[in-house]
Image (cartoon, rainbow, N blue to C red; front, side, top):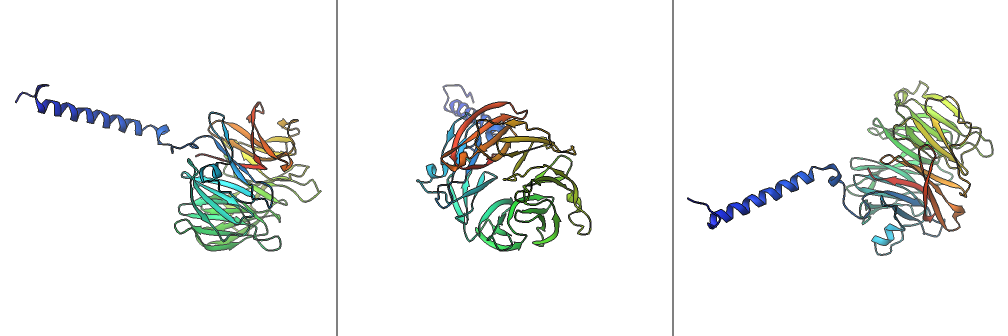
Length: 362
């Protein structure tokens, strides 16, 4: 049979061939890693967590895009003006889901990260601070109160409910999931609790310097604990612990302690993308510490004369950009300064009230 262009069968073959080419093109495009990223208005860039004024329920999240555009209060913008809550403490992104911990509102708001559309709310928490996610379970640190021990609440993300609670030391703060164990810094003490996820119990308590906060793993397999120090004593420190000793209660976990000869009012830090250097701050200064060093840096990497008081820090590992948040004394909108990792000034932009932390897309 002659399947010429004038034949209805010829036209059918041409249409089928065209459909095949289109399908093949779509298949090739879908294999591009860049196009596998979640689509949405907020699918690139960084989220800035703004605490807001205590008791005012004006905490928010700012988005700063790859095109250098800052969008304020993205939660309210997308969700019909809803207020995010009172003291927005932290945000964690896992598999395009954003978990926003709201401390004084005692909840976690859960959103689609790329669009910021609200998914659900986790309630029945007591002064929550930070969280980490493993599969369908979230582990949320809680202060509980200023007179009781802190704890980690275990949340089933399928039912959005708390299914277990693990008591730690007072002021359960930062949390790190490392090699199947949870490390929790107890901010009102000088300890880090090590928790077995299988047994959901503390298997070891590590003594560090006072007021531990951020927990960061380095390229040598060690974990660094940023400790703010006790009030007025100028005894802040960076403490290196060996996680291989975590299941051996009788063995010392602390490898070395780097005395900083000053307090760190907000014990937060970021680690370089290659995990060889810690960046921490005090006042208007940012310091860089090489994890192989045995003493604190003698001078700051950044001395920001234009800042009021730094309150948060983070590094975008995709762009090697250092973000430092200035709370401006909570008197109005804060400012975020951007630097390269050598301390070179890039630019700055306006955030919400009390910017204190950052969340980066995976």
